[in-house]
Length: 368
Image (cartoon, rainbow, N blue to C red; front, side):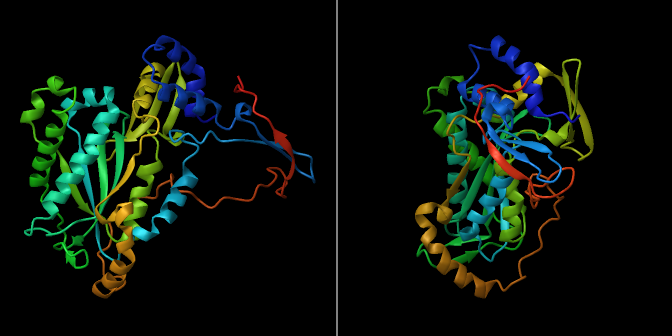
């Protein structure tokens, strides 16, 4: 039987909640309980039967928690369809801003403050440098997504920004294209990003707790060409609804230990990690976002208040960038987090459509 995150939480979650009761955040407790109950009788559902062979099948409700690995596939496709207004016929870049390791312990304990600062400082730094006439000379558009984990579930907060290759001049009409295969200088951008972040952090109650190493080290910013708008959005979409670990990466659960697979960030080779169930749950929960926190944000002329410019801009750009003129995107591996076509709800034995019998009310508990 395949290992699932829900089963790990069912077995070890109660003991974890009891041990860390005073320190466990409400959002963490809520996510754990939702994942444990997802698609079980605890949430209720529907009962179906096959009119041909009499087979009975239960279809339980999903928890719809944004950290549940079972509940995000369909939302990915819905989000992609809702972003069509952002598509411009130009090349796109992916800008990535990373919080340095020396600040991560503070960030983990003060997530709302640090995540908001990460968005504000990175967006302001990008816009400031983009207005420099040596590079673009105008306002750029940015779609940003917060991502908090590395492949082995360690805490690694960073933001990916999807950015069209160019910007708007001060008149709000003229398009200023970026140079070929170049958006902004990452070394200069990283210095401005660091300065803005620390300036904002010094105004917070945590000013006296900033590690001294932060002032000395270089901050990391990366920039990569990602092809046209359609390809770029498909590249970014999984980052929005992907959870820290999917069930398909779980290998086994035995002797109170969880083994999962991941790829090395150095060479891309597959590796296995084995953690105690308690440590595994701890690593997962540090990526549960604060309740109500918005992890997708829009800046520049992608901001909701400025999107009325996009239809006219798209029309003007269609003359500058004829179809198929944008450079090809890097080839991406198929991503199983993107939704596939769903099959009709059919009998697993004889294949004919099943018949709805009745609704099952929630019972407030999950099966043992």
